[in-house]
Length: 330
Image (cartoon, rainbow, N blue to C red; front, top):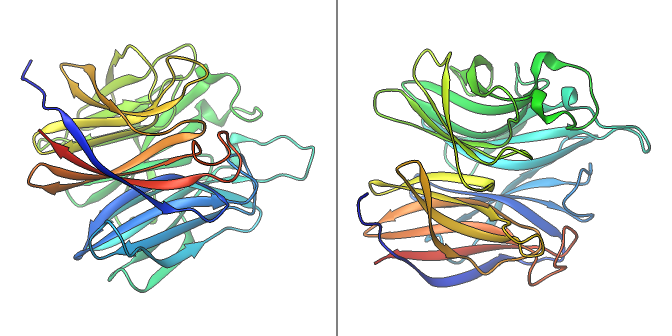
């Protein structure tokens, strides 16, 4: 195994602190500016139609963050926004739950994806319903060779069932699109115990994915080659909640929630090497936390967004804050 560098946390900035429950971040650099997205909700972490997706912009990625766009969807909970640069446009994708009348159960088969997009970072369109995503809870996105790809969590065969019970039936599907708005099935990251999946394309078109675990299955590394009709899994030694998988230089960075002790969830960074997680550091976090985004700034520097309630409610209710960490390789 190649020697893995240490990572120093040079600074932590609290970017959003408005009394709401703010969570589920992503971060990107587009046309000379930085963009940060997150979800807010006055009630908290769970499923509420009062939720909104926010997009902020900054010149340097550190300070001066200003709101540029926000959206919600009537009668739906919006959450887990993620960026994708595709076809010279910036997309923000959001999964949504249908919020049934009080007392009625939620159904995974009512999931539906939405997107907002921009050509210049200033003028935004959306939210636009994504054709082909009904029944899928969409998550992270990537692009390769003129096509966009999404992770979509779904129930195998769209079998009836309430909420997310019978996890052995939940797939992590890969969807593809030629325009970023109309989607179709392209493959599977996992055929059971599927969940949030972060993924990257290799130069030859093969896919490396990190699939969040679903009790009793830990997080898994999933590999696929075109035409993406077969996957190979390697189980890791733990779960990674709200996983990030990103390139930092020529290395693979993983981030997400670590819960080795039930009363101490913490956002943690790792190197992924030789199909193993090598812990780097814990970020100042606790309570409800994780769901990081990352930008490689070059010159061994990086920016990481994440959320945590450790300086707020300490749990999944408001207040909960959005943070940025300035990282440096040693």
